[in-house]
Length: 161
Image 1 (spheres, helix red, strand yellow):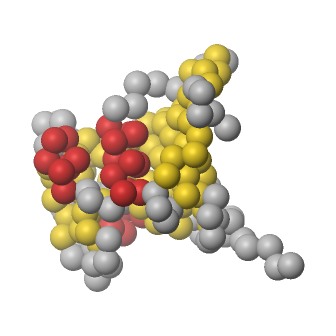
Image 2 (image 1 turned 90 degrees about the vertical axis):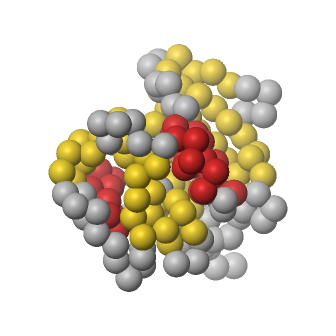
Image 3 (image 1 turned 180 degrees about the horizontal axis):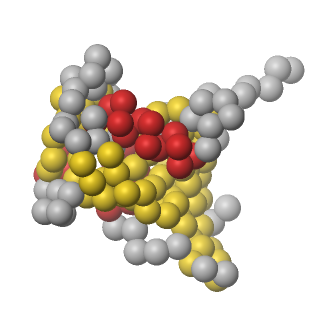
């Protein structure tokens, strides 16, 4: 039996001074938060800064880790979600992301229709501290477990893992 490698991904909810959310339009998945794979030997925070710059043309002030998603179906992945604040740079589309724009939180929630990415946006948008851990399968999209840690305290729900 061949073990599948775990893909490591970072994503970031970025707000500007007007409290708008920065979204990219991916050529296949539609509107979503900036995100991408962590390269071998790369720190998570460095990967966030690199992906945000590559996909949006902006520099951010990175906040703490806010959420971790574990995709348990093939191909397995762990996604680390951060929040950040826009600091500088012009919005620049790329081949992968033909459109980059600021949206109100409500508009952003309505535009992100891919279920997995909508869950990431919603989780980070309403983040209120600590780290939220969510396990899911992709098809059909189902949350299999949730655990919230806040400082040294760990709160498990009935559906925790």
